[in-house]
Length: 634
Image (cartoon, rainbow, N blue to C red; front, top):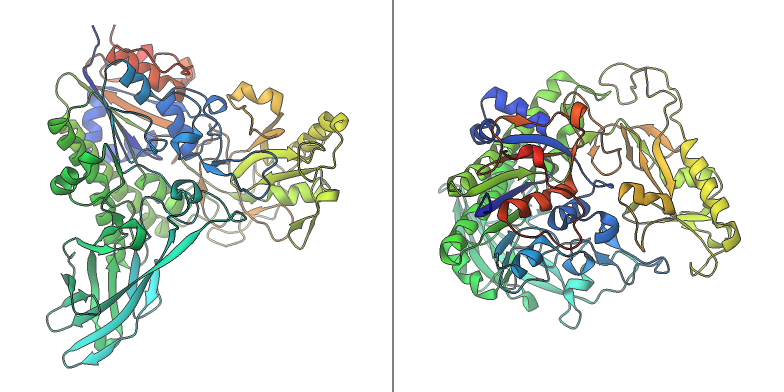
């Protein structure tokens, strides 16, 4: 008999166990506390590289990135130097491994996935997909466009300035919402994922709007130029949802929030949310309108930002809360109306907060300022509180036969230094550039955009402009590895806390920039292989992130945090690069935490086999992980 009848995976991108414990100890995460006390927790080794699509792909298949082919942010062949055939690794067609949703459906178990990578286009028939995380550089194929902060003055966030004209007691602003869409003549799913260099057929849609601001009433009214009403908002409040036409994408939902309304002082701020389509975002399509009726429109991303403007900071968390809570509400509706036994979701707020605030919040960073750090720590606290509310909705949904797991794809760690790998290849003579452009006839090794740790040899007969004789292939591999492992951080004079050029003396002086570098034939040791893997693959040491360096190839980083560049086990006393899992329900041990010093880390490939074991089904055919037996009751 299976231990559970239903499994809910609450995916929280960038969740870190040390931070959860910190805020639980403060008493501000009651749902995480309940899950910890009643279940099992531990850190996991993500797959290398610790990218978002790479590890959500592993969590959906139980396979390593060499099998899924999701080892970067896109798939590109050796001979495709311009990216004409790029395919995003958020695309389900990029994944070569069978998913848990497909395996479950074959065995009569219905699933639901919301805002999860590699779910679109759908590869299931009877199971359900809603609001998939399906995106790439530039044009967004699901979200119609990013939101806008319409304002009369420059400031933080995605602003567009508007000019006010007074008419009686009100002020008018005529604006144009310009949206770039992929042409209907193109497959918009494919075209949306190419990088610069490829041809993309696009069309522009202009949506003219007229804003009326009434300071005495503290209100804003949004109209079409012909006077048709769109929405109205009171100061400090959201408008109702509105629908506007966006050309070939059809109608899109959006709403407005009046942040400030002092037109006489030229201080007006009106936030417009990111438009999302009315249709084309769920499988089967028949669930779209019932979800809109029950839960409202989906909001993919926040327009507001965390910044010195407290109003915009509050709105960021408000928008993220709407986005996060939409998922359990949709899941509950579909559970009651359609039925499902396996649920997967992805929620990105913590990773967003980490990239923006971790370096300033972590006392280990050389430029840490305790007073400044308090505010950045508060951003983490608020982000976790939003996640706690989302988790609580799922826990309320769970009955005695349901397992709930909160899990992440990776953690995050601050960058102490930025490392320019192209500059390193250049200073060792492996790469030659002229005003930033590669001189192919003199270049032995090169890299591709968004495949950060793959170095490719410019090989004759394989690369279109190859110069390296195949007989010299292994010799050049050794040259690349030597260049990487001999790359060291030059000693610098120590500075004072908070100074832009400061560096604490100690182990980073003279430290290797690269933790390891191996030949392609040796990369399967790390689960990394496949047709698109580099001839040499490498990963940065703890504390080293990627970035351009104007003089040399490594320099102190002023801020920033990453998960992909650094070795998987990187951590500080504040943060961890590892994935985290907290799980409770039938068949799960209570009050248990895995001891990595005694037992090693769990591995992310083991999540799918463990879920399948609990549900009493066979795992996907490509899964390589084992069941996490120590988290299960005897």
